[in-house]
Length: 99
Image (cartoon, rainbow, N blue to C red; front, side):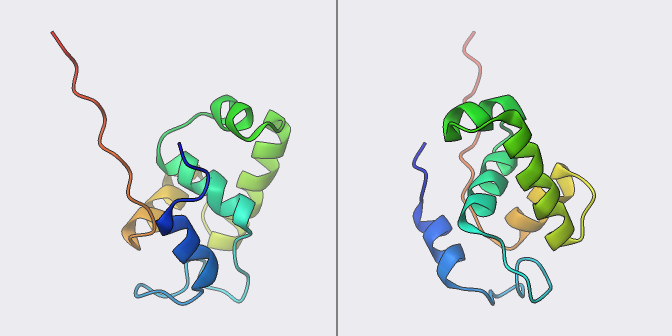
């Protein structure tokens, strides 16, 4: 997975998007928070995110808490929905199971 996709770069440089600011407040998500939010939207676990980013699971949880506060949500599903509803990321479809 590329750490900085075109969609991610667009998010970092644009604070007001067609759906409004991603977080609905004056605070913006940091580049690391956006990276973690994109991974959460892709369905990665905290452990997988920590390994991909070479940080501790505690660090991932800390960033997720900050993301939830800034977005005004209470869990990763709500955060991922906000992220995806605003067209922030192109999440590849799951690979079909082969029989």
